[in-house]
Length: 308
Image (cartoon, rainbow, N blue to C red; front, side, top):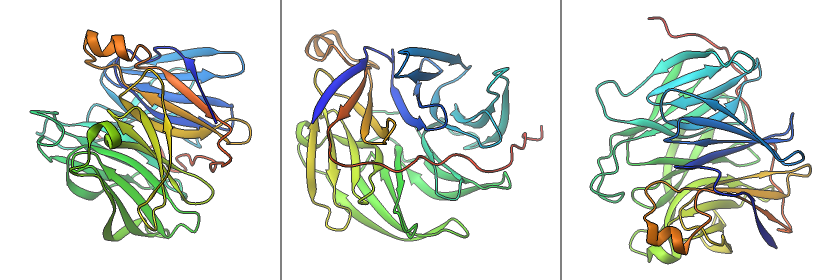
């Protein structure tokens, strides 16, 4: 196993939401508070940027062209050529929330969640976020309420289970997933790190899944990505990310989907922490893992502008 930094200090705030676009062999990721979507080409080392007007929680490609992103409290479509932004939905009216992590399910629906202000801290912050599902007809549905920090999502190969992370209680959940409707039920805690040392386990953040249906979970404040067996909740493997502590998410990429790209945060990192972790905000690549991921799903649905 080898860990390398491929984009040094890539994010000035929170690097998040990595998505490997196999059509273009590029890595999409966002810089949350810098209001930016980035596209990195490993072959050319080129890193391009789309600047938006509010925080960006996630980005996924749309089959009909362009990108779907969580911007502030809105789901939007960003045109690939003109960069025109079309608002699709606005959520959490009257609440001080913003979109955080999001991903597409195997049927091409977008799942994306919100979070409230991190005050006084992650553990004690208000649970005013929700998890939403954007269907193929463009309609939006609330799937989970009373969420602290909505984060990682993943689905099993048989499409019968969905995994979901709320970072606030430091838990990972499994739901029964009905692929024809997108409905979820029978919530079960499969990993519970509440009360465990932050330095060892951190806060579960973004997540991906490999071809063996094992979960790879970014551990915020613990400098690592942990591989879990969702059937037992046991830790199978731990990858230390050098010179960065606030690990936010990961995804498989590369020509053979056998490379793990890892994002992290530099947001509000104090000088003494930056001295200890000078690669905060960077994008890393882990190789020689001996496992592969599956192709990332894209939004397969309609692009319907919000009626004002």
